[in-house]
Structures are given as C-alpha cells and as structure tokens.
Image 1: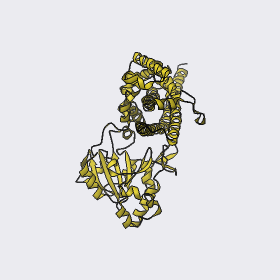
Image 2: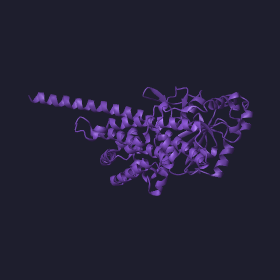
Image 3: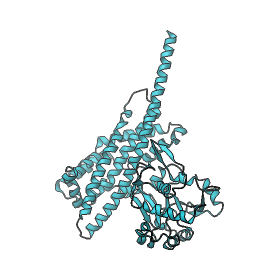
Image 4: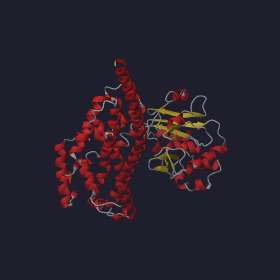
Length: 469
C-alpha cells in the first residue's frame, strides 16, 4: 500500500511538472504573438497624433474636413476597434489566474499569465488616451466619430461606449487587483526569472505604461465625478463649453502619452558639430545603428541596438556611382536634393529622412562594408530605395515581400551578406543586434564612427563597439 501511495505521488508530481512545462510553452508562444499587437498599437498611437495635429491645424485655419480626412478618420476608427478587440482577448484569456485556486499551475506561470493579461489591459487604457483626446478637443470631431457609418460597419456612439468602458470602476478595480498581484509576486521571483527575455518584455511594458504610473491611481470617486460631467456634455452636445473643469480625465495624460514614443530628446539631438562631422564621414551604403534608451520601444528590442538604417549618399556620390539617373533613384531626386539621405523603416513605413532627424539618439554607430566594390555599393543603394513606401512588417518575417522592418531593410539591401537570423514561431527574423554582430575587429563591417552617450569614441573604436553587443 505504501509503495502504491508513493507511486501515485510520483505520477502526480510528473503530471504537474508536465502540465507546467506545457503551460510555460503556451504562455511564451502567446507573448511572442502578442509582440505583434504591441507594435501595431505603438504605430497606431504615432499615426493618431499625426492625424490629430493635421486636422486641428485645418480647423484652426477655418478649413473643413477633406474627403481624405474623412477616410482617415473612418479607417482609423476601424483599426482602433479591431486592435481593441484583439487586446481584450489577450487581457481576458489569463485573467482567471487572479482567482484560480489550482495547485497544478506554478506561481511562476501564474505571474507570467497575469502579467500578459495586465499588460494588454494597460495598453488598452493607454491607446484610449490618444484616441479619445481627439473626441475631447473638438465638437465637430466628436460628433463625427460618434455618428453611424454604415459603409464602414460602424454603429453610432462607438466612442461613447469606449469612454464608458475606460471609466468603468469595476474594470479599474480588476486592473488594480492585477497590479497588486504583479507587485507582490514579482519581487519574490529569482533573478533568472526576472532576466528572462519574455518576462522582462512584459515587465517593461507594464512598468513603463502611463496608465500603470498615473491614470489608474485616480480614485473611483473621481472617475464617477468625471462620468457625470461626461454625460452632461453628451446630453447638451456642448463639449467645448465644459472648459477646464470638463472631461479633464481624458486629456490628463495626453502630453505624457506621447512619452510612450519618447520621454526626452537624445544626447546627440541638435548637436551641430557631430552632425557636420558625420556628414563628412558618411559614404553611400553605410549602415547606421542607433540606441535610444529614452524610448519604450528601444527597451523591447533584444540586444543593445534598437534601430538601424542606411545612408543612401548625396547627389554627387550617386552621380559618381553612375546611378543618379537610375529610374529608382530619379523617383527620389527631390528628397535627396533636400538632404533626406537616410532610408529607414519606421512603424509608419519606409521613409527617406534627414540625418538631423535620425540623430535624436544617445548612441550611434556607422558601419561600412570592408570589401565592397563600386558596383556592389551602387546595387545596395538601388535595393535600399526600392523599399521606400513599403509598410511596416509587424510579423518581423524576413521572407515577406510587401512589408519590412528596419533590420530587414539591411538584410534586403546587402543581399550578398550571410546575415545571422533567428527562428521564431515558424518565421525567421533579424534584429539590429544581428546586424551589429558582423561589425568590429576582423569582421565584414568596419566601425567608422561611434558615439556613446552623445560623446565620440576616438580610440579603439572597433574593440569598444564589440563590448556593446
């Protein structure tokens, strides 16, 4: 009998271990898929801010919405609702772990699942801050965005429904419960657990969330008070008359929500001397690496470097390469003549931007192929410019043709280089750090310039660069 009991306990232990292992794999897979949603959310915020400012400028000049503006608002509303639905699914999927009494789930897995759920909920709150700010600022926009749009399958009062969900006391209490669980249990975990890439990803998303830091600390009574004001505004449809005592909760953190993109300027921002020095050093086809620790997105990218781009070269360089009148280059003559010489893949798509804009960074490195021929350099520039106007690849798949991310731009431009990649969920990806791994002492790429914390590294550049990766 004793042996049977021991056998049963042993089998139960193995079963629990197996279940925990399978759950770990499932959560990790869900987190990796979740990264695509987060990237889409960041892109949505950036575009929302741009659209808002453009429309507000027109209104200030007494101009009406154009047909293009209306299309942008309608498609933007659709995108917001689709993203919102996807984030809700993530937020609710592991929420049960807050109340679960199952002993078969390890505390580590419970925390990871709850962190994923909490991160999605906080991202929903943060997304709302940008979307609803348009609704608050202008009566015409609010009325338009709340009207029914049959052609887009948008029912009336969509923004109103989102506002009520945002102000829901029960929703906020549930998120606070998750926050308390997270704060109580994170500190108990081992350093190995905390340093795990996926765990650290969720931790960063949560702790850098403006809603985690500020918005959700607003008391339920204040939310109820603001909801009352909200209803009075809706009833009279006179949001503009609410003045500073109106729906302040909506715009409480609008300025700070932009900080999701950037909390400060980089150390090289508006550094004229460094800009001029780099302009003289750069050569067509050079690769530019950057690090911006003041941006949340930089913290979510594995490795030291967070972004990478290509210098296409000046008009005179391209003429020397014999490609100035190439059909692909001719399409960008105006941009190149206006010193938009950096090709980079941003969340809004692949663009040509000035070096001055790119230099809003702390760290910057310039890499140059050590064995490239003139023809290869010319071909690299052509391939780079072919990518302009492509959409951002939220799947991070190097085998996709119509979409691309910053490091995929390098992968495609330098097609003859055997770049290191990483297989994730059935697709191959490349990061800025993968690019950096081929630069330094006795590597394919030389480090021509290096700036750390805004200061130029003048000695042992290649060796110093290698210590960063």
